[in-house]
Length: 369
Ligand SMILES: Nc1ncnc2c1ncn2[C@@H]1O[C@H](COP(=O)(O)OP(=O)(O)OP(=O)(O)O)[C@@H](O)[C@H]1O
Image: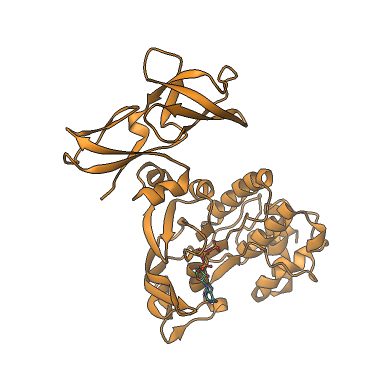
């Protein structure tokens, strides 16, 4: 029997380069509390994942992302609350289902591959229940899916960083877990590789349809990968929504700052608008006298023109990003230069006078009181 025949008999793993389907699990954290070193690390942490959903946990270093993942994995016990996978309570004070009884796949940033096992054996390790022939067939198919066919006999140190990441992915999805937990899975890859491996990983996650939790501190990564993004701060979720919605309507100034640097201008509401040196910003629903911070993102918050509309400014610095310029523009009445990211334009030079045009719909307004 060929590998493909065997794998389709086992349920279709990779028969035509497809990843095979898991029975996706629902995951619920309810009021979970974890204390470490005498400090609360998760504090009444609530999160519900629907079966098949991909949620990214995003937050500053130390916000509790990895701890939440370790709790779901069964590596970290909880002091309060409960965690359920499907309808089973797997973590609660006094109750702790061990990791190997949770139906989960794990992938950590260092990949945790077994150095003394071959590529094939690394994947077969988690497939013992299938028996040797079944495990071998399923591992071959999983490796083919991630582009590692032909490398089965090599050892992890013989693979590049991107290949090691793909091996780790194959190993974690091959047993078809209902729940996949990934902790900074791309952090050891360089920027160029990260982009392509990220895309491939997302394709595999979508195909397997496993419910997935991905920890990252990179907002762009979270927006690209997550059906929803949960923003953590001090052991709690402060906002959860689609990445696009969190970017568009961050819950507060700190949440906004997390996604990009901001140029910030303080102002006061008068007759439904806040006056700034760049023009009026509408503030519907806010009463007169309310003190606000107007936050301008480098991308889209303002445009630079050469006359007609806008207020005068002067470019004080310019850096070339790939295909884009990052300019700093000094405007009379604004303390610090405004950062502007826009399509590369060789005509824009430091020292040049420009007109700065506010895009009111891309400006964020936050209460200051
Ligand atoms: N074993 C431990 N003992 C004491 N404190 C700990 C322990 N493990 C983690 N912490 C603390 O718990 C907090 C949250 O850690 P966690 O690793 O969950 O954060 P994180 O958001 O994943 O951060 P990072 O992005 O840096 O990995 C940190 O302040 C950390 O110092």
